[in-house]
Amino acid sequence: MKRLLFLLFLFCTQEVFAAHGLALYGNPKLPPQFDHFDYVNPNAPKQGLLRQATTAGFDTFNPFTINGISPAGIGLTHDTLMKTNANEAFTQYGLIAQDVVLSKDKKNVTFTINPQAKFNDQSPITSEDVLFSFNTLKEKGLPIYRVYYQDVDSAEILDKKRIRFHLKNTDNHELPLILGQLPILSKNWWQNRDFTKTSLDIPVSSGPYKIQKFQPNRSITYERNPDYWAKDLNVNKGFYNFNEIRFDTYLDSTVTIEALRSNLIDVHTENVAKRWVAEQTWPEVQNGQILSAEIVNNLPSGMQGFVFNLRNPLFQDIRVRQALTKVLDFEWINQNLFHGLYKRTTSYFDNSVLKAPPMPNQDELKLLNPYKTHLPESVFTTAFSLPNLPSRQALKEAYDLLQEAGWTVENNVLTKNGQPFRFTLLMDTLSAPVWERIALPFVGRLKRLGIQADIQTIDLLQYKNKLDHFDFDMIVFVWGESLSPGNEQSDYWSSVAADTPGSSNLSGIKNVAIDHLIQKIKNAQTEHQLHTAVHALDRVLLHHYLVIPHWYSPTTRLLFSPTLEHPQKHSLHGIDLTTWWKK
Image (cartoon, rainbow, N blue to C red; front, side, top):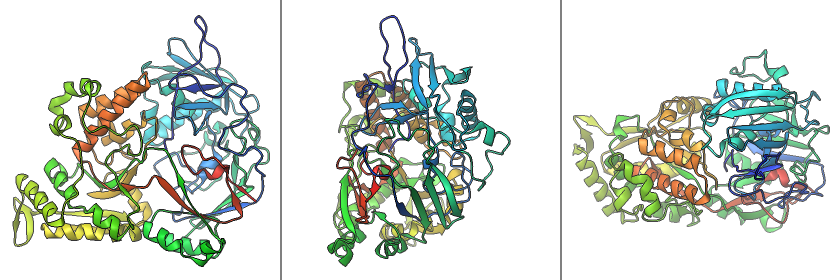
């Protein structure tokens, strides 16, 4: 699911006026006085405790920097200027900001803060807080904030409740709505603290929940703020129905499952197909003590895979990456480990209209042709596909590619210039039990080519630090995508992000064509232009073989307590536990 979305704007021929919502293309679907979103139960009771599990500890309550690990659920404590309607791909409505004005020339955007807006210490939210939040996140926050806000020229306080952002690039149509996604921090609480330092001091915050109690690395409980100023706003009706939400930390997912069976937690999302099949035979599922459901989502699957770090000279030759892609035997894995429940991922935007068609059309070629010398020839001549070959043939084709790249076998070891082909697949201790059983057959097949692939497992904090500084050969990673790709693509694939610690450009790709396509996505003025640019980007990424693609499921598999209830209608995003309630 994408964190930031949107915009166009309502204006008449001569004037610009305050809007209750913003949509990237066209107008917001909901009128100014809408009552609630259509995927919630506005009459859901407010009661009870929701018990959830996490397998990650925490050492900070600040989720906005690369330092430390913040607890599960911390987003419940922070509100933004506007809120997304999950059934509109490109639209948001007022939350802390009661309205927004985009100037006719699109050179500035002005937010008016709701006069009722307060932090959880009952202090008012002002323009000073918004300006402080913007500057702090841009200067000291996660790298993605610098990417998102790079086209903002300046911010200007107009009065206590109004703030105006002046924009450098009026073609970045998503930017005003990205500003609408700004998390609002308390200037009074943060201004004399080191924002970059990990801390378990409970901050003053702006969201519907506040931290009630915690034990570092063991448990955290959030309580619904009874004085939350926005609890009756139309964008919040039907949300935040549990009086308390608790996350307990378990050693791994196996222990988590036992906690569910022992009635210690209320809900579990199952992403291991083998376990899901076994769970359907549990007596607790058979007799209704635990409910089981597969809930469809209608979002792009994103890209999960074994990620090559192109900063390693070993992987800079595309023929090497193509060869290793042939080694992964998805069909064997799917049948023998996944009970045939998965589909092979063949796009960064699979399961959606954003997936690139087999061959580029004329509109795509207009974007791609100027960069022909910077792209693989296959982008223009060949439909991307992943191998579905008998094992022997797949390995032969892989070896042929490696030979073309200058690698030969000596004493059963693949070498080049006297150096063996050896790399490490890095995992964290929490996910390793799941991934090792998938990685080991892959490693075994690599060995048949003379390649030594080692699996190294380290603790989560070390793992995060290595990823932040791109200190790895290969990892498992997932890039999430939405129906409205935009500025986040810079963080994923841009040349600048490749050199920015903490960015999501883990592959290290640097390519002027990709940078150009990202800009086209950000500047798209129509849905057709957006789809064309995304198709072109998808095609280019695929033909660069940055990852060995894995698989996806268009459903979310859920086990949950019969004491929980959910709305009859789910949003495009599928499951949203903030709309559920306790019976």
